[in-house]
Image (cartoon, rainbow, N blue to C red; front, side):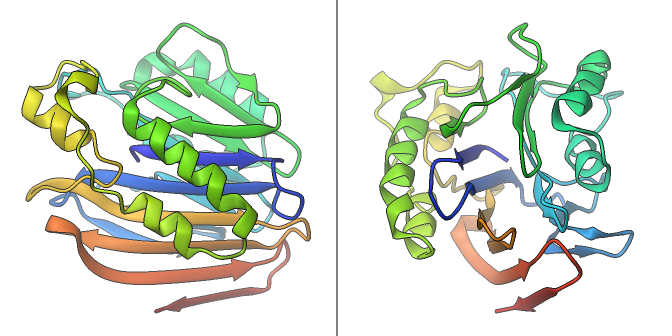
Length: 262
């Protein structure tokens, strides 16, 4: 996941709203959002290589999402999969800050990451870069890409503005998917320097990343209402921004669920 926009207790009818793009190599196999057979309370996409996920929710109003921290070097071998951090929270029962305290204790087992975890009462954040402990987040609108929370990268700043402008129109979903589909490349003078080549800095500067081998694989909108019902909408993409399909799920805290490919 390379872009997460999040509104926490910032809307009267939707205490949690998340719009996110997951960027990944197209060769890495993954499954679209669905309820998991081995954890039936979890609704999320799935990394079929390591078994974890990048973003998801559960019937008991747990939410988690993750981005990698871009450091300009290849991950290498011997590290644990960062996607397991999201999956373990969604399928577990630990309070958000307690869970992140445990993650912080073993943070050196993973390459760089940013992690949101939350339940009906608390939203918390932790990164194993930057030297800060886990913390709960106040009500507000947040943006996260592949650096630390609210780092003002150009694509994050523009997407966050569009996200805030779209919130009053809820439950309309299309404005959020429109902002997630923005392929504008940032001018060179505004690009961050993250240790990758200039060509890659250009490609990665767009909200929706597009190339032949790597790019935005999924755009996701998650909305949790004040009644506890969660709606998760996802669009999946192949190389060069080819739309592969759409999935939608609406579910309550109990056993009611409806998941239909579109």
